[in-house]
Each structure stands twice: as C-alpha cells, then as structure tokens.
Image 1 (tube, rainbow, N blue to C red):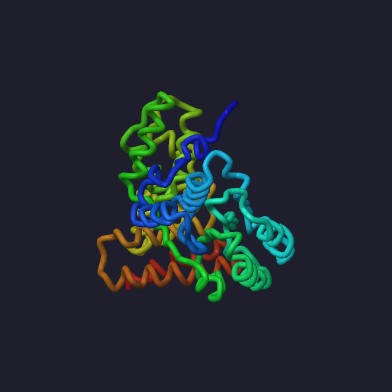
Image 2: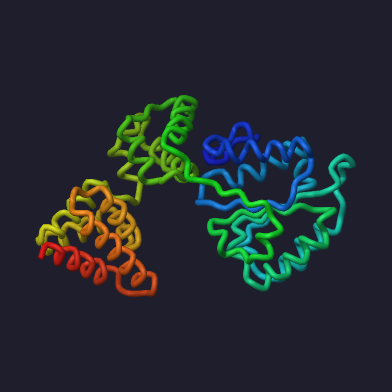
Length: 317
C-alpha cells in the first residue's frame, strides 16, 4: 500500500510539532490542566494547525480519543444545517471520560463557514460550553465573525522556517532511503514557502521518479518557475526591452503551466531582491497589487501580464 507522506510523518504529539514552540508550549499547559477555552488556530496552510488539534485530542483522551472528538471540514459542510444537526447533536452528549467532562469539535477551514452558520455556531458555543470545546482552524481569522473570536483563545501559526523544513525533509529522506541535493532543498522551500504539507508532497513526487533528488527533478514536478527566470523577465522589462520580456514570460508560463496569479506572486517576490532605486521598487510592488486585483476580478491573464510588463518598461523613462 502506497502511503501519503503527509499522514505517515504527521507528528502524533504536541512535543513533536516543530517550528511553533511558542504555541505548543501554551497548548501543553492547557492539556496538563485538562481544561481550556475554545481555541482558534489561524495561519497559512501546512504549518501544523490540524496536527495540533489532533495532538491535543490524543493527549487528552488517550487511546480512545476518537470517541470524544468530532472533525468536520467546514469547506465541505459550510452551511447552517451542519451546525444545527451534526455540531449540535454531538454537543448535547457528555464525554465518556469522568475526569474530562467535555468533548472536542474540530472545525477545519472554519473561515469557509457562511455568516448564518457562524451566527448559529456562536450560540452553541455558549450553551454547550460544559460538554464541548471547539477548536477551529482557518487561514484568515478576519473571516471569522467577532463574537466567535471573542469566545476563543486565538493562536497565530507562522510559516515554518527553512531550517525546520530542511530538517524534516532530511529525516524523511533517510527513512525512505534516498538522497537530496542542497539545491533541491532550496527550490523545495521556495516552492512551498514554509508549507510543510506541500514540501512533503513535492518531495514524494520527486522520490517516485529518482532516488537522488536534484534541482532539475524538483523543477519537473513543481508548478513553479525558477527565480532566475522571473528575475530575467523583470530585468528585461525595466530595461525597456518589452518584446523580449513578453516572449520570455509567455515561454515560461507555457513550460511550467503557470497561472497568471502564480506569475504575479513570483514577480512580486523577486521585485524585492532587485538592485534598483527604492522608489522604482515600490512602484513595481504597487503595480503587482493592482494587476493581481484585475486578474482576481476576471480579466484575461495574458493581457494583464503583458500590460504589467509594459508598465515596468515605462519606468525606464
């Protein structure tokens, strides 16, 4: 049976979670006291939010933790019905553990809940606080209504630093018996941006092709242009060579199968590194934001990217 590495190497306890020590130390204190308020985990994908919730349940309830733990993905069941039915029914019954009088409901991607569902949820959180604790995870805490946020202790997770991601990937490589080049680590981290789940999935895809993972092997499986490619495109544009920049951009998009938003994100990232006047750099960042908004609103990606490069070329004047 082929295992998904994100599950195979998922930490089983709070102590095993790396890169979030400030948060896990506070969560361990909650577990030790066998009591905690409702929790809200906010932060980017793949940084340990779901893992932390599962670890809390395991450490609190032991071997039979699933009997006292309900996990719902709010992006799949995002309406008011799931709150009124599944959540409310689970909240009505007590925990089978005498020493821990409450159960846990974990709402993953809670920022996908509709406004009506969140309004219904806040009342349940109040009425059934003796029998259930909620742990909610989200990418954007601003999408959670204020009454729910005020009922929760909020923990903000950060993208994992490069040394943590590198250490985990090295451990996986040693366990699975293959090698990784240093350049491959760099590209894996650039592509994942601190998202451990994405880094592990990319590494597993690479390892299925070769037992020696190189930068070129990573480039084959990742939908990500080399930073040098984007840098050359931007430099060509701001030097006034619009046609050359546009041709390189179209070639890069086709070769890597990138979306317009992917390209804008990489251009914005590389713009900070350019050795140009600070005012020009700020203008590049402003233009990236403006043209990203146009794409999100539904404008043609190729037209907007060409227009972005044209604006870059005008900076030479």
